[in-house]
Amino acid sequence: MCFICERIDEIKQGINPYFVKELKTGYVVIGDHQFFEGYTLFLCKNHVNELHELSDEFKQQFLVEMSLVQQAVAQAFQADKMNIELLGNGESHVHWHLFPRRSGDLGEFGQNGRGPVWWLPFEKMYAEKTKPNKEKLSVLKAQLLLELNQLI
Image 1 (spheres, one colour):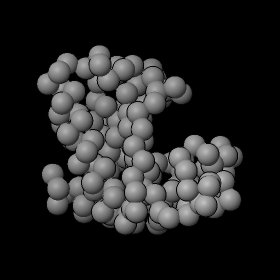
Image 2 (cartoon, helix red, strand yellow):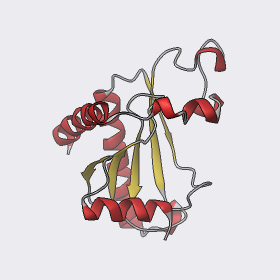
Image 3 (cartoon, helix red, strand yellow):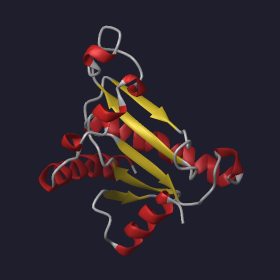
């Protein structure tokens, strides 16, 4: 079983602490690491490797829902800009990365503090100190759920 499928299984069992909301085509979860506060993922309910492998109807609904999740993330975390990526190089189960961005959030790693999230060194983005504690995770989830419930 892939890592994303394992996480979805944890959601279904009620033991995934990062779970925020279930939609028709996927699950909204707060990211395990929060260098970019509000970093969220939207996990596809179907295990496919590529977006084009989804049926047209499901794919269209998935894209609409991703857009609504993106809007909720932007509003909940006061993003200046949103970075949205569907990569699948590490885990080939279709899932979106949604990064709320703020001016200068890359600091010394960007050009004038700007640039893609992947310019940040891996060890900085995934440092232990970027993991939210239970209280912070609770706040992040509540902020996002509030916006999601208003939009969906």
